[in-house]
Image (cartoon, rainbow, N blue to C red; front, side, top):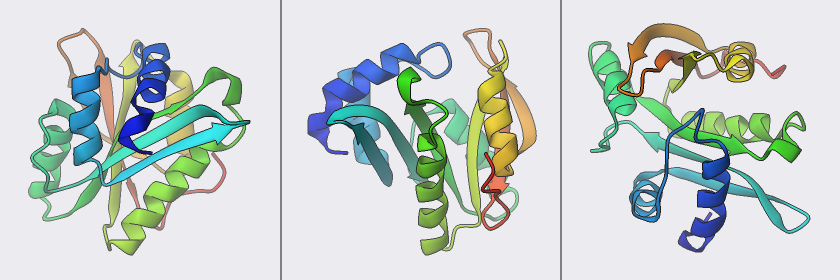
Length: 166
């Protein structure tokens, strides 16, 4: 992914805002700069998905990231925070999400980071995401209520324990 992919990323994000969060050009630029892992997938020359992930220790102004930062600080650990993974509806179920997560787990192993974390919606429930993460080996370590009225499942996966069956 490059800054020139902004239009495609923003368009894909708009289609998934109900299960992620809004993203405008300014926020994309900041998130792009902050992210340690940023990948964009194409199919037939068209962008069909992306992942943005951030290593712990960054001054990222995001409530979910800060929640994980506090949780890991108490346990003296480092983590990779997956800010968002989006796969276009036409490409869901074809393994692209697993490919993105494999890249995140590889980055964790290469950086000797033991944990990958992400949040997913409990209320309203995002059953597909919850099931996908469970199959990968993510476990809930807490919940968080957010201003929008959503309840989030805060989850972590220990690198090396994730499953290949999602």
